[in-house]
Image (cartoon, rainbow, N blue to C red; front, side, top):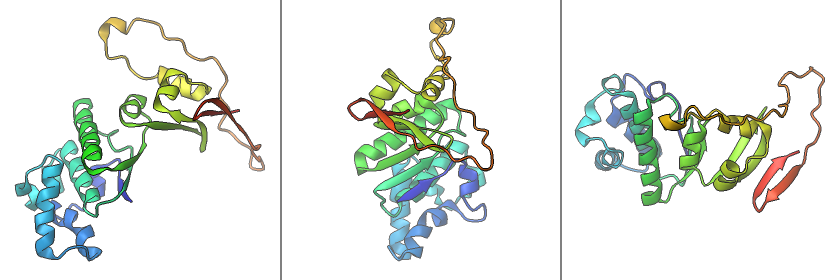
Amino acid sequence: MQMIFQDPFASLNPRMDIGTAVAEPLLVNGIASRAEARDKIATLLEHVGLSPDMASRYPHEFSGGQRQRICIARALAVEPRLIVADEAVSALDVSVKAQVVNLMLDLQARMGLSYLFISHDMAVVERVSHRVAVMYLGQIVEIGPREAIFGNPQHPYTKRLLAAVPIADPARRLQKRPVSDEEIRSPVRAPDYVPPVRQYHEVSHGHAVMI
């Protein structure tokens, strides 16, 4: 398992060139010799759409999207089966975000990766995920296949998340979208508050909502 974090600049050592950064997990874990690591670095950089010649550059010499590609290459170095992407594209511009998401999907198809993709951007979640879990106040309030969550949302918080997704088509922007008026539980809790044990209601096969 490996991680891809929200801020690629904070994830990279500013005093370490990116070749060294990508090679570090290989060398620390004894997976490759230095010569083998150099070859692996070139391959990984090509996998994420960067030139192997960039290995001697430092993080400040790259754009935000390029830095996130470097972080993806570093995550791939130890050949993980699962990658946890924690808001991995939320700090990127819209066009760059789309490129990085497409890269992640391409790598998933080519390398058989699984992603645990954490995001507040439901448009990106719909693009990436096969199964979706919606969390509110630290609890999963709705879970199910992508088609069920986006096509038949049940929990008030899920409905409001979907209503907040911007509409790209200018012709549809003036259309009114219904917003759920169902009350969402307050996050304010007394110090001695003990939350009740809640159950899940199965809406359809694999689709459950907290009641």
